[in-house]
Image (cartoon, rainbow, N blue to C red; front, side, top):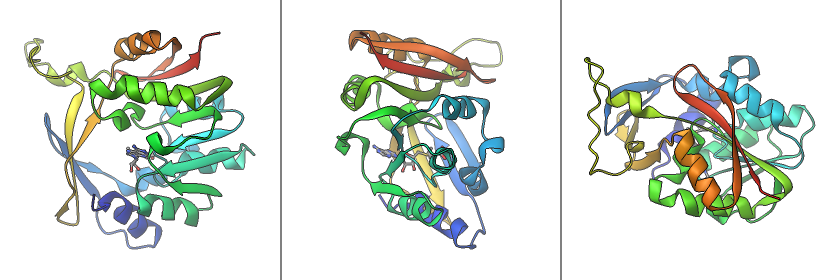
Length: 234
Ligand SMILES: C[S@@+](CC[C@H](N)C(=O)[O-])C[C@H]1O[C@@H](n2cnc3c(N)ncnc32)[C@H](O)[C@@H]1O
């Protein structure tokens, strides 16, 4: 990984904002990811994220924190929050912005326990592939204190396969339709391609059930997106 995402965040943080990140996927063309969006404040966040932040309580882990916008909000509310990310640049930015507990760390390497675990801005993306959902969720379960909760958002991207006649062109022999190859470039340099998973609520819930976890639909967004709360069964 060249950490172009982190480099872009650092540029913005240091006043060197000249262009946005360009993303594309195996089923969609170029799209801009505006850097200011990654530095959003509470008011600028989507309703699903605002709701997740309102529900957060106790010792909290912000997984894939990026520039640390969610962590900063919680810290201001006197919530004990730790922010982790695999991007060195992102963690550097989160630190510079004032997030007190930060670590360059992958989710599967975390082993402390928490009352709230946040995975926001398509939190299931970090699971990468449908075949890994169970592994990631059981790891997340192992990080939960009694009565702890995981707050995660994602989208059902079936609509992206709809043609003009309202039919769908999903290849039923292929992997799960929400499993995408994700390409990112910044200032003309291309990042190593990665996998990024969009997981519909029913699939998330089914895997939770198989792991003896509750999965509750908290809020639906305006475009097939949702916020879910996952907790241990008693
Ligand atoms: C879409 S960004 C979201 C950033 C931030 N949560 C936000 O809402 O602005 C996803 C973040 O997850 C991080 N990430 C990807 N895989 C990860 C993993 N296995 N463990 C921790 N962080 C990861 C990426 O480096 C990136 O910063």
